[in-house]
Image (cartoon, rainbow, N blue to C red; front, top):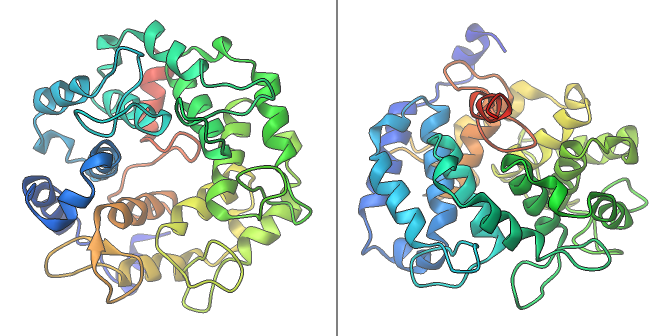
Length: 321
C-alpha cells in the first residue's frame, strides 16, 4: 500500500492513540479499569505492543512494567492477570510477550515457566487453560507460542499437540475450539498460528480455508468472525494474519479493509472501536493498529502474523542463544 493510497483513505492519528493508551493506564479508578482488573496483563500486552508498533515503547517506564509483571508470577511458574489473582496460560503468554518487547526474558526462570505451561498438556495432546481443566484450541496456540519464544518446545509432545489441532478441523476448512465445534476466525488464527510455528501448515487446506476467510469481508470493507455477523476491527487481525500465514491475503480488498479500520478511530481523543462511531477500547486499538501493520500501512512497524509481536522482537529472540 503506497503512501498516496493511504492519504486518500484517511490518516492514522498515531500520536492520539499513544496518548489514549498512556491515559488509559493512569485511569485505575475508572469503571473500565475496575472491570478489567483481573485481566490487566492482557490489557498491558495490547497497549504496550501497540506502542511498540508505533515506535513509542520508550514512553513508558520499563522498570515499572517489568516489576509489576513479576509480582503476578505464582510459585507454579505461571502468571496471573494481575497481582493477587490465579495463574492461567493466557496471562502467562502475555507476560512472556511483554518481557520479550522489553528484551527482558533473561530475568525469567525459564525452566519454571516452561514447566508450568508443559504441565497443562493433556494425554490427547490438547491443553488446559489452568488447573481447572477447560480445554480450547486457544490454549494449544498459547502453549506452543509461549514455549517457542522461550525455546522450550521440546518440553511438550508437539506431534500430539498438532494431531489434536488437526482433529478440530472442519469440512469448511476452518477450525473450532474443540473437535466438532463451529469454525470461527479467532480459533482459526490460533490453530493456523500453532501449525505455522510447529512447521505443520501442510495439514491446512489453504484454498478451502482461504475461501472461508476471504468470505468474511463485508460490504463495508471490514471483516467478521463467522457468516452473517457484523464486521469488527478485531478480525482485521484474526482473519488477516491467518490469510497471510496461508499465503491467500491477496484474495481480499486490502484498501477497503484499511479504510474500515481508519474509520473506527476516535479522531479527537484517540483509540479505535469495533465499528465506526462506537466507543473505543484498548483491545480494538491494538487489533486495529496490528491489522494496519499487516497491511503495511506507512509509519507502523511490521508485526509477525504467528507470534503477534513486532518482527524485530521475533528476530532478536531468534538470534539470541
